Length: 350
Image 1 (cartoon, rainbow, N blue to C red):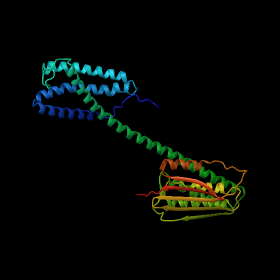
Image 2: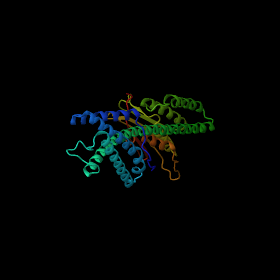
Image 3: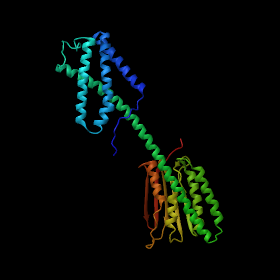
Image 4: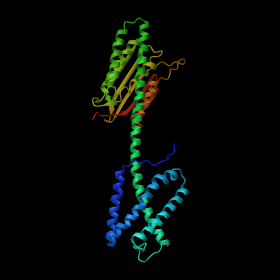
């Protein structure tokens, strides 16, 4: 995994200025009211913020990227303590020469430099501001990074989905052209009918569903029926039954999601089978699940092993991208029937 080497400066400069300005005013008003000495509070906070602000950005943009993100925790701790010690020296000196010789006037008694209580108090105060400011910055940066990653994943999803859709269309037309070629070799009178129906299918693919994530289920059924009519021209004895149950007028589905299942029924059911029977059942279950089932009879042949096509593989990949794990695609054999059942959530155009 690629190592993260820097913290991105993604928050606008004016937001940094607003943060420190508001924080300074609140701190100034708080301590000014507490000691009833606003001039002292102003000078004290001026010294404090002039030192802690560089410390915060030193920590965020130097110490954290160079040491924490590279798991050099001992060196990070040493440099942070060294920075705090430098801050202590500067704050003590500036307080002594600018404000008062009493370096800690907030205490109940007079303290001298390098007394342990004074060192601990100053360091804890700096660490408090450092932790608070760093937490705010890193939280905002994390939120922006999460949004950036979400947008990136969404773009990758669209690209991959488009790639799979572009594979499905040539795959389908390649199979149909093979059928047309077989009929032309026989000088069949069916060729003109196949060309017309193929033209209708191409119009649907190239114009009706281009750039569309979901299409009405009724249009997909019409598309499947046109495809079946083409296949009927190729097979001598084929019987196809389509049963539509429930109200499907408002149901939308991904375009061309069922066609590979229908293709497989003809492709594998038609092998060594003089009387091909296909049955398609489509219904809505509990107003939330679309159930698409296709059955075809087949003749068992030990000498033939059908090739694995890309149509069904791509369909599974598209379903995974669109619905993640919220779908079911099962295949089984029962007696001499091959059954494929797809269940997906229903979608409304609203």
